[in-house]
Length: 363
Image 1 (cartoon, one colour):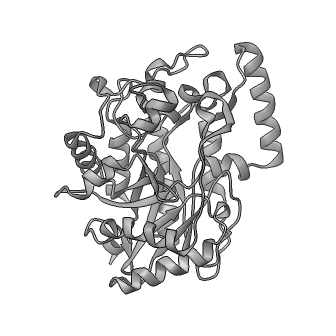
Image 2 (image 1 turned 45 degrees about the horizontal axis):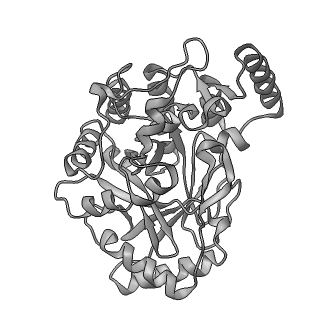
């Protein structure tokens, strides 16, 4: 039956579109992700900045209508689920309120969590060395506390499970001192609560080229960062560097700059060695431009259009299908500060969402 083979799209989701006390203290009162997005400026001719949401919808994710609207829109255009970033610092939570509100809502989109386990720094204004919220790791009693926090989400019928195991993505397994023991513990606790275990998906991204964890069930490639860091030939790197130097000289910037088509072709043409006993999920991305956060030291992938995106996404879904892989993880639903979002904007309206719908329906 062809139906069962259809690939499901899961979009990464950033909950930082609301103010909270820590951000007020670190960045100034009322700071949200929109603050950087609104003040962004074009840094060269035809640079698409600032990115403005359709109908200037600078939503606040403490508002349940805004949360509901996102889920309804994603569902309407063929997104299977959101992978929400979850921020847990040894018992301290950040940005948890939208997700706690979402938990109690009725008509939802499927979802899972990605624990974004990295220390918070001032990287957004260029100072990555100043840590404002360290990421510490406890032992068993802290794992228990974390598990108890996650359990009501795992028990939600909308939380994505694989073989009755809640999916839990780990951003940087190489940061966690006793990662395998922690996964074993969470696995045991899930079993004690009626699940078949926990389904940990380890990310390969710009921080991790290789698999670090024995206990993780699967691995996913986080794009476009994994490919930019590890997926280019030496010749391609040299060509990109030369183009970047030429571009920066002409525009007085210090950017890393790449071509959308070339990055996507690198993603699509990469071969995957099978990893024994682990599932592999491939990634996709919409676009990329983090100059709202990083200014003229940002990274830009230029040349994206909804038509190109549709064609590359379609190839990625075929690729996943041919490997019997159930999910493709897409970066992102709403990373406005990094220029990779499916949400409608003033320039393209809903064209990226329409591309998703077309690809998902025609697979």
